Length: 193
Image 1 (cartoon, rainbow, N blue to C red):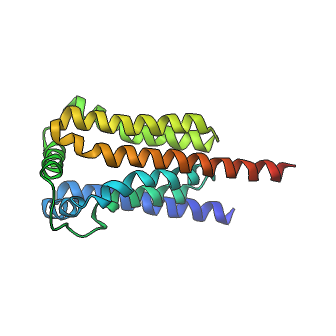
Image 2 (cartoon, rainbow, N blue to C red):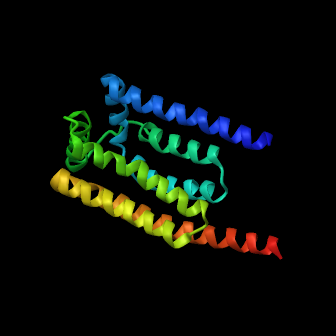
């Protein structure tokens, strides 16, 4: 019982920290600019999809704290790396598009699009919570495909700059999630016998 309460308290703490990070980012232009300067470092682009791996693991293990810490880490990973010395024009253009989009007018379509992010994570979490590998991998593929399509459709030519990080991240995630899930299932089945 104590572990369950501790798990939920830690989860709530990191949920609040994530919400705080989002609110501060959206209401403090200087902080937002500081974060986005560091997000120009494409290492943050390459590591962000990899957070789906621990997210799936913690959903499989029913760890609210693990899920919440992973989501917090995913959001904050935008500024983990130093601002790069050189940035390609397509990366600059795409991140400028994203900034303008986030600070632009919020209409029904934009709100609907933003809602797909938590809905996708809920679907992914439920898939692995229920130990459904193929449903979970389907959600991962849809998330990556949706991000690529939205980026190219909305960001134009500069949106293509996310294709390599997104596809590489997708391939690594599918491979490692499949491998990890298989091992966890073998262990779970062995414990049942």
